Length: 162
Image 1 (cartoon, one colour):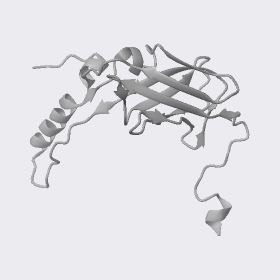
Image 2: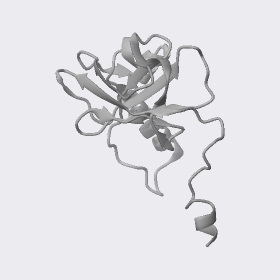
Image 3: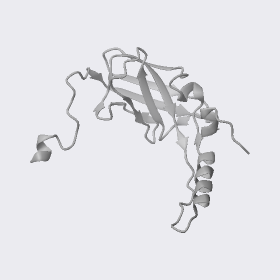
Image 4: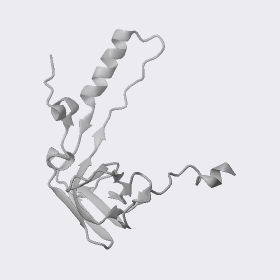
């Protein structure tokens, strides 16, 4: 009974929630749909009361959600960043693995983790991608060119020690 009263665990809809308009974004990379990419949408006016974004499916499509709860995007102009991080499947340490080996395994995983979307599209501060919602449903497609392979160190501007 208590679950029914609180909506089965969903957040209560904020009273200041703006009107949301259906939005579908398709991401294309290397002339194919890009799956498992994170799409982040930020208002150009800097109003960050809500988070907006989603993850692309096998067809490269996402329907952005506000605060991960409500489908749609409020009216406005937005900057869009698209990111896809590939993390290698490496063996997990066992109970017998020494601390030194654990650190080496962690470092190896970090070194092999790559961003596959170029910074002009993956960085919220550098993205050239824009989305405009004008009081009606929007379908938008973004072609982000060829895949890249950028290490996390390169993304963060951290030089690697030999």
